[in-house]
Image (cartoon, rainbow, N blue to C red):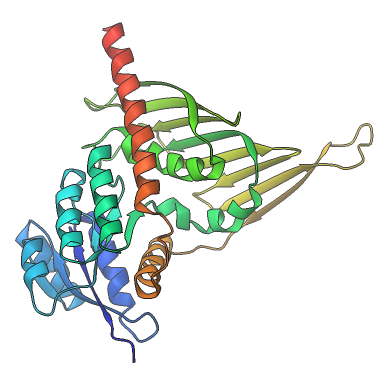
Length: 324
C-alpha cells in the first residue's frame, strides 16, 4: 500500500487558510495525502487554523521541516517577499513546493528555486489559479494559433495584496495564460500605468508583440467598481471569448458559405458549471508529486510570467519618471 503523503501549509492568512482546508478535505485513501500541520508567523493565526482542521500549529516553518516525521509537500502562501527563502529551505529539505504567485520577488530568485528543484528532482509548482478555471479547462485546447489576444482583468480595491503592483497582483494571471498559449518569444513590449489609490501602480496596460506576429493587449485595474476577468482570442476564421468570472464561453466561426444579408459568423455560447479551481490545483500538485509527473504550472512558467510582469513594471516606472 502506497504511504500517505504528508502535507503542510506555510502562511495561513486569507489564501493559505483555503489551501489548508483543501488538503484537509483530501485526507483519504483516494488521493493519499494528509494535512499534518500549518505555519504562520502570527502564532494565534496558526493556532486558530490548526484547531479548525485538527492539525499541529507552528510559528516557524523551520520547526516543521525539522520535525519527525517530516513533510513531503507544502503550499507556500506566505507574503511574496518570503517566498524565495521559504521555498528554498523546503526544497533543500527535500520537500515538494507549491508556491503561490508570483513565484518570487526577482527572476534571479526564481531561477535559483528552479535549479534547486531540478537538482533534487522535486516538484516546484506555481499557484496560477486561472489555469484551473472550468472555463479555461473547457476551451484551452481549442486555441491553436492566436493572432490577437485581448485581456481585461478588473477588481474592486482591496487592502489585501497592495504589497505588489496591479501587474504582479492581477495582470500576471493573464501573462501566465498567454505566454504558453502563444509559445513564441516576446519581440516588443510597451506599457503604461498610473497610481490611483496606492503609492504603487493601480491601473496598467501592456501591449506585447511576439516574434510569430501575435499581438496581446492586456489591461488590469484594482480600482474598478465591479469584477471583470475576460480573455478574447482571435485566430484564423475564429473568435473565442472567455469570461472567467461566470465561466461563460463564446465561440464564433466564419461560415463556410456566406449568404448576402446573413450574419457571417456562426456563434455558439455555453457556460461551464461551477468548479473548485483551488481544489483542482492542489489535486494536480499532489498527483504530480505522487506520480512524478510535470507540474501543470511549472516553476519555469511561473518564472517567465514574473519576468514579463517585472519588465512591465519597470517600463511603467521609467515612463512615470520621465513625466514627473
